[in-house]
Image (cartoon, rainbow, N blue to C red; front, side, top):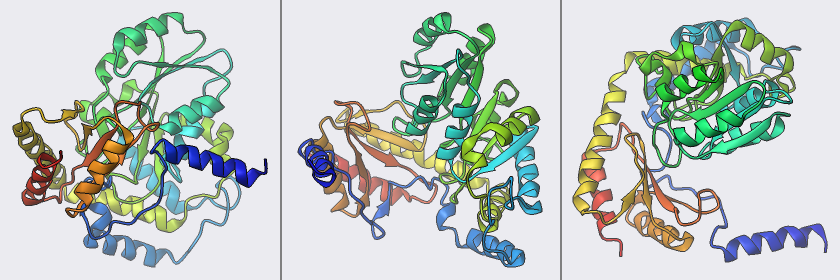
Length: 374
């Protein structure tokens, strides 16, 4: 069979499973789908702040990897500013959160070590662990008993990997308990703050910052393409960690450095957030309003246990979830279905993302439309 035919057969099989993906645009719908939790991606004021910074840089690209021609004073300056925001010794900027997790997990755990990651971890965490020479095992989601059992069987240096806020269920990791277990078993924690960056912590420094436990975590990965409304990511940790990544992390060494425009966007977004911390409260208020309203539907839906911006509404079956999403979209609401195999079969869902800019009228429209689903 020719390669084109093999690929097409796989696409046909996915279509028969009602899980074929495609690209769509929904600019005219009310946003209950994007990760732009604080509305920074749409902020005209932030746009102008970024433009002012980039106009003064007068440079389009980084021109190479940072170990060759791609390092420059401005990126080091912004990394220093981020280290103050994240309360870490040093910070290293990456092009994306995906690359950051690949870099950390593929380079630091060594042969004979053990990576234990929450089963609900993002694909980039699993891919990074797969690229490592270490042993890797998942533990049941937020299940400390299962994690403890696996810690007792682990060898070498142990790494516990978790997300501050999980992207599909919207629930929070049990960070204080994870720290306690890590200390008991002399393990190190790698924490992905992707969905808490900007949204939590007085300076936008995530769950670890909000709980003031950042000094108990070996490596923190912050992503800027969600709550911060821009693009890029960074690792926060010790000087030794950062210097190690510069020397051994292939996704850092062998890629072109972030362009000055991207770095200016990062600096501007955090400056903007520090002047607009009310956006965090607006988001929190909308989350509570949504939960109050949906609870009035008398248990019509099974919900994921979330107190954060991501709210999962379980509608088992790919076709059922897909049709529910289409019904909401036809009513002007941008709500997406999350299908198997992205989530486990039987836990297909509508993934509702709440934002600081959603009005109560929009949330009421969403609730009424959900109530009308058959």
